[in-house]
Length: 348
Image (cartoon, rainbow, N blue to C red; front, side):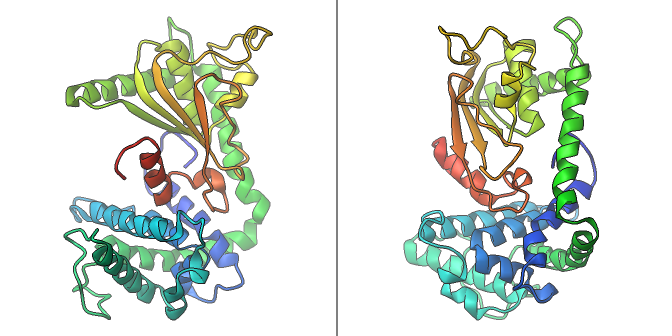
């Protein structure tokens, strides 16, 4: 979750294991059948996020459309949670959703969540075509639950032992130190090899090419160009747009858990001007090639910094991930994507 590249399932497995940390180490946790149940009793939305994260791997060649089904189910569950709780303002978990106290195991929770969401959709007139009534006790091949949701439960059971072992062996400090060390390495590696306008480095070229391709695709469809960048990715995108490729027009830039504000104050960007701020200019001028810039941060994320106090035109938004390691909890949260879509005026 902390790097720009990488293949295979290891990063995803790492993220799932970290998401399990609070549950496995918590006093309410008893066995492998209760990962989602215990999470939901604290926060139903966190359980939905964990379900989406655990079920997001797999080969589409053998499961065509299964990922889309999982995404649709988790999106519906997120809307259900957000509407009833006012996005958590009215309450959450077992204290708000009484039915959570009636389920004891994860498979039972998954069935009940499906039924509660479908029933709410029918009562409110929001029922999609796939939200049809189904018999109880249908956690099986006959169930219309997404196959990946069912498989995600089994995956969580398999990962819980490894997570407990890692907690006992490594300790809490190591959990935070590793991603922070990786970020530090990324920072030093990028700034030492980003190159110049005449000879840009490989990372700059790669990002610039991706922006060009995305811009061409957006233009061909008559759509806005939206760029979402997490952590060190936000710093690189800002460097590219402000110095290497100011000709690229981005309609919406979303930086998440980034250090852009900090790095500008340290004057690390190629476009940084050590003469700013000054008595006549309190902030760095807004990027003329960016229509709107949203910078999202969790106050408990030690690697996320505000941008609005440093840059003109930047909008800082606070999002509480609820994750133990907040820095990796933004993009794996269904609520994050739903709230971002509403914030910019697009349907979730």
